Amino acid sequence: MSVYTELTQPQIAHILSDYSLGSLAGFEGIAAGIENSNFFIDVKTGNHSTRYVLTIFERMEAEELPYFMYLMKHLAANGLSCPDVMPRRDGTLLFECEDKQGCIVSCLAGKTLDSLNESQLFASGQALAELHLAGSGFDQHRSNPTGAGWLAEKINTVLEPTAARYGQEAAELLSDELAFQSSCAFDSLPHGVVHGDLFVDNILFEGDHVSGIIDFYYAHDAALAMDIAISINAQAVILSDDDPSRIHAFLAGYESRRPLQKDEHESLPLLLRLAALRFWVSRLYDALFPRAGAMTQTKDPEEYRQKLLLHRGV
Image (tube, rainbow, N blue to C red; front, top):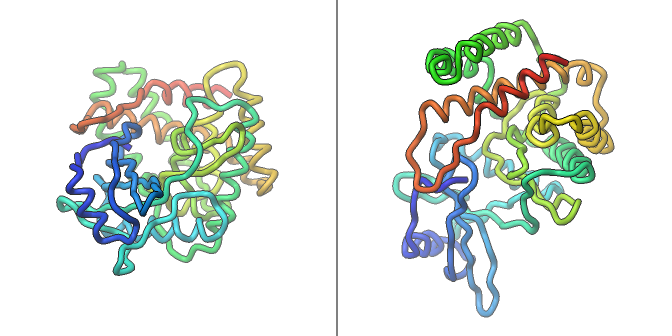
């Protein structure tokens, strides 16, 4: 949630003039993540102030955005603690600013954590299962934007510069894992709405309790077990001897809400490899072909190379 588009107070006040939320009392940029520009905005009505999150979409096409808006409203209406999209006075959910689109959503209680203990991992697993259950009735669909075609294309793009910067062994690992994953099929697994990016900076806690899930802009339709694999890699796998018990805590929490089918259990080791490859490639691409931004974070690709090696060795 970096800031690529820098907004001034008059610009934000102008955006707010099309809402019935109140007047702008203050704002600040949110310097975390790498995809969109995000701001906390404090809005005053009388003597009361409410905090919202204003997002400017930097990469996504305009036709993609309604899916995310309606998905968040659906999930919030079905009991998931997630941002609810604020409507403008004309009932629309998106605004335009500097030839880009944006939205304003509710700001949830709680805070993100740098790392999770086992109790928090259990609660996170429960929250992901609740997301999958709440999304089961959503009638809109979005294909996986980082599926097999994307993966092959991006690996082809980063292969040579990866060898130059990270060594030939890294490039060979990319090619070998891509060939292996091309022989795997997960179409028969239960599918539905997945978050697709449930890292620790996208889940809010109050103590050991999950108070909300945020940042749904990678959401799409996919195997639910792939979402589990992404979340385990992001939250539970810290490349230490504690990893098995941490993974067990997350899965125990998830299955307390939605028990996995046998084929999901059997596919999980392969999906952990696929999820590690997908995020390694994404981080490689961002590191090798960085975008300019006023407040940005580029995440270390080597973390996910090591996670892929871990899962290949199990």
